[in-house]
Length: 627
Image (tube, rainbow, N blue to C red):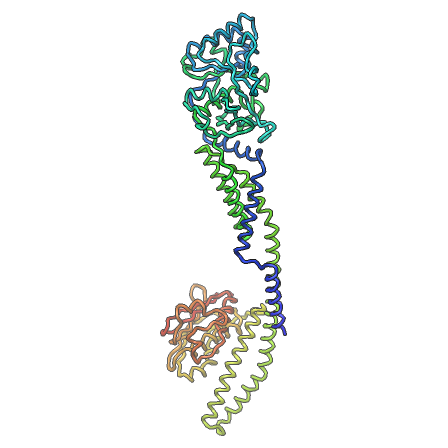
């Protein structure tokens, strides 16, 4: 009845699985991949400029600082200039500055602030513009980008109308891209017309076409690129007043692009935020223009990876995350995903630091978190279901184990009574040998031997049941082990005599030890009787005792068939019997050595065996003297 119930439960479980999980493994994997690719497709459609800008800033801030071209020099109207002149430089001061610069023959001089803000008498301002016109190249880089038809905005009012004006706008991510006010980009051209920076850069690098430059991308009618920033202070500016007064060697500016700007901390318009710092005065506009120029001269603008590559990386990482979450153990899965995040981040950093390739990181990394947190509840449901199944199986196995133990206990007790009667009747019959012929005596001896074997087997089963139910407790008393062994040998002498086996004893005098007499007697009885059963007729068995290093050592050595090397590791296993023994006529349950090992270890001792096929076996029991 119980077996049929178990089978019914098993069939029900299989039926449930066939209903709820009808898909083949390849189809399940295909669905997982399709989901991961869908997540990648959706993510790549979402613009995450702010997060991606943070990864860009990190890479830019921690990459090795690139060398400058050495072709750009900067001059700043700074606090020192204001202090020494006691005012902002006027037309006369600027005329003196240009006159000093003319001596060094610079390739170009660029003002990056509005010249019309220069104060002074008309004659002084006119002298400045006249001096500027004597330079080979003098420009004003205007912070504006006029649309077609509004080119008049690039013309200055008199007396500055002779100064050439070119667009050189400052860009900040205010309402677009990251929207954090940081300057990361510059405008290369507008409606096909280049801004001031590429016009100046081509005089050094010789690159005439847009296609020759790295990292350009289109945005609202413009071609833009990202600035290859150097840290603030890389372009150390000369003080305006020092250059004006001739304190700076003129060869410093020879054949260089000289940029003139402001660094007075009077207005935030002269400064900008950078990938290195969010401070509103992190860098001067003057140094920003120097960075843009060197980015173009050296053609170092970061190269953005194509959109298909972003999708491919996001899809691959999504697929990996899905399979890791659904197939691996949580701890191992977290380690793999952590390694994936670290490895991918390091890969992107190295590409940027070494090759100036900007691989988008936000979408692939975000896909890990989305796929992970999407499938974790599903994984938890699966794990809870498995836990419930394991619980049910364990509960079932516990019930079966209890039923087995109860059955063995009941069977053993119920068999002992009729077995004792059989043994008693056999003893009575053997006492009256006159009425029995030789064959009858042999039959009665066989009955007696069989009942003895059955009694030992029942005893072993009862001991096993006590072990599994943890009912065995040591009843320690001081015992003479030599005396205990002698009693075991005397009891086994009958079996030895039937095979003409000589049991030799070599007992050293030993102190009494505290031990459980019944358990040790069962251990030694098993070893001695096994030696008799597996030894040939007219052989010898040696039983010795001695004290070694504070331990009592008992050895039982025989001249039997021995044990193969393959079986030595298993002889103490429950119900284990070697193939040679199973195929022989020697009976046994396979519990004797298991019980012996358990009882010896219960006394905090050890039991070992040394054996070779055909050369007998030696069992060694070591017991501490202070048990």
